[in-house]
Image 1: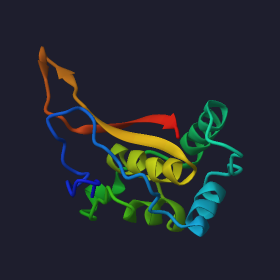
Image 2 (image 1 turned 90 degrees about the horizontal axis):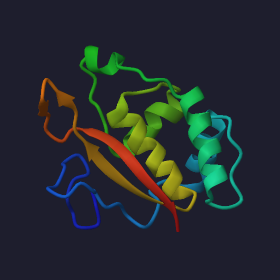
Image 3 (image 1 turned 90 degrees about the vertical axis):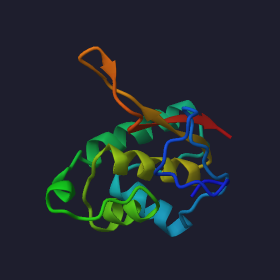
Image 4 (image 1 turned 30 degrees about the horizontal axis):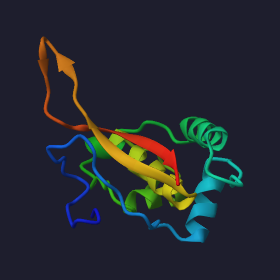
Amino acid sequence: MSNSGTPLTSFPDSPTTSRRAVSLLTEATIAAYLDRISAPRPAKPDLASLRAIQAAHLYAVPFENLGYHLAEEIHMDERVVDKIVNERRGGGCYEVNPALSFLLEGLGYDVSLLPGRVWIKGELTSWSSRTSRVGSS
């Protein structure tokens, strides 16, 4: 849920979905996540650290769509962190982008999830894909 009570799985008319100022992840979960992606904890939330964390995440957490084909429930909230960290799996964009955003928030970055649209055959699709805008606090 966002601070306004709007589920993060819905896309408002505005292209930005605001996020909470407080991390949902515990310090132990943040440490386990960083261990999962083989990344050291950054000293501060700066651009160099963001680049390192993003690269580590890309190398360690695969795009995986098995859950979609096996009719597994897809989580876009903090429960997806369990799948990536404890089950050592990957996920689709709806899963890995929010999971990474939770980690980044826990490390002090200011993160906003952004919806995306795809241009297909001369038309834009509905708001569906997720990406993130990240800044330091």
